[in-house]
Length: 233
Image (cartoon, rainbow, N blue to C red; front, side):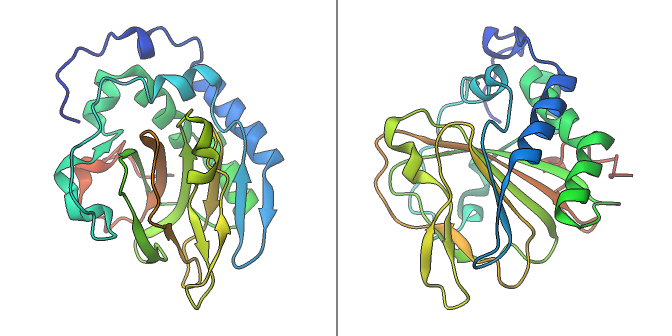
């Protein structure tokens, strides 16, 4: 993150919700999640984060980056990307609260029970995205070093419901989109059939979201990780 404002900002320092509240709120969300099996297993989420936390993230003092065409990949503009890194956990309390909740044993074990995967030895990576009009991502699968992918949408624009992640079948045929309304989300376990992306569309505002991944030990960009020296037990 490039902003130099101090971390004692009203939008995050005055959070009523602590780490335990984020854990409990997400646990309840996960228990209510709607499992879809076509074209691959994915879970649709509502009220993924406590309300004050969900509002504090898009209130962070970080201007949406001015970037050109993404060429269908986020890594096209790596220098503008923002993460809940070790540094930013210190600067922004909301980053620390969310990262600590998803690093916790309670959340990890619950995710493992629901999804059937093991996250042992992985590391937590959380990206804060602010996508402007013209943003798009080509269909891709997230396979490789990512063990788990979760997106939480944080735009309150009325038409944001239609801004969720697009889902494709193995032939890259568009089958629909995850609901993109405020504090809704989607989880999937990356595999060779988890085709998803963001189709080209117009945005009336900034498309804001966080992407939560657990990544394998060979992840090279250690500065992106929330706890770079603390793999999941």
